[in-house]
Length: 460
Image 1 (cartoon, helix red, strand yellow):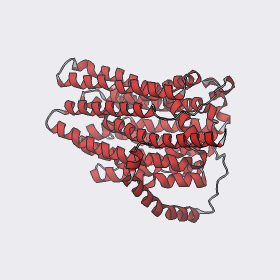
Image 2 (tube, one colour):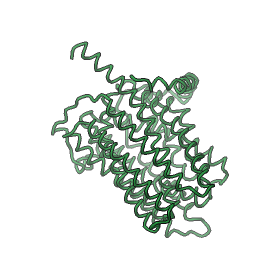
Image 3 (tube, helix red, strand yellow):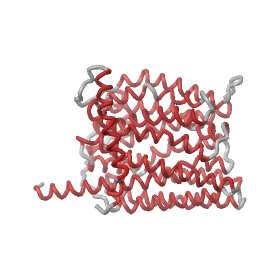
Image 4 (cartoon, helix red, strand yellow):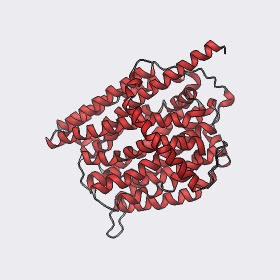
């Protein structure tokens, strides 16, 4: 590649990274107006507790299966085509969801609507996931390895900032319609906004540069081969660990909406503030975690974060106080899940060659999805049949989920290792000094970037 061609590709990648941030913001709109309200919507149309839990189990199973299919598509079709087609059809699925809300509002075939929701939700999950391997592989070729941690943390910063703004706004909006006894009209409008947001993402993806990639037959390996080698490879061990952690955490997360909306009788505004309180604290630490992963490595971050993640189910049930539910679970979820998820993405990029990334991430997510499916299914069974004295079934489920997660972390985290040479921490003071040193300029940088976000919307 000559110098002019190299400079042209460099500029195209730069423009694509900016477009990716823009697309991520509109994707956060879709989630804030639609995705985050699917469980509350299921509750609003009188779905059973078991069906609400099943939404998570279906997501855990159909999502990875769709990604498995999507990983094969990129062998024959360009990654860009896979993404734009699936995103377009995904946007259309919000239209029948709007129709379900309208039928419930008009009291038409209300007894069948929870089943219809389950069907269209399943189609939505398939369409939302089939493009992920292509997108993951695509982004890996657009973002340079040397600053991948910092760039993804910056992208997450923008997305989470707007997610918070959109989520709180939508909660105020939906609560207003609930007070006027027209909550279904509120859902219809929110789902319409989700449809328009995802359609905008489709338009943005069409403008992004797609580097060419050659995937040969030798780069293919079956899911069976992956499972066979998983216990002996670093990436495979991590995939198994993540699947088991997803299983243990899905047991509680599948009934979290039931706990907050039915057990505690919270309104939509309080519900969404509690759920998104983690985002506030995530904004504070996201770029700090990015710099930590770049300096000390992904494994170091995985160890630190998994010390705290298993206690999350327990802290939900310690107090029904609104202030407590906003602050304590929010801080722990926001700080430690942010670091864990960022390290997970970078860990996959570091351990898998670019030709195999689409396939590898689909298998990774397949295992993770099986974990979510089994965890959510276990939760759906437990909430129906579990009765332990005076302890409510939901509280018992939270306790069981926490204890199981502790066992998974204790036995799983020691099985994986860092493959890249990173600076070793000489002591806890070294780490504290680094964090304190980075925190102040990082927070100032984040504030400036959020304020100047307009530049990311300028035509690149």
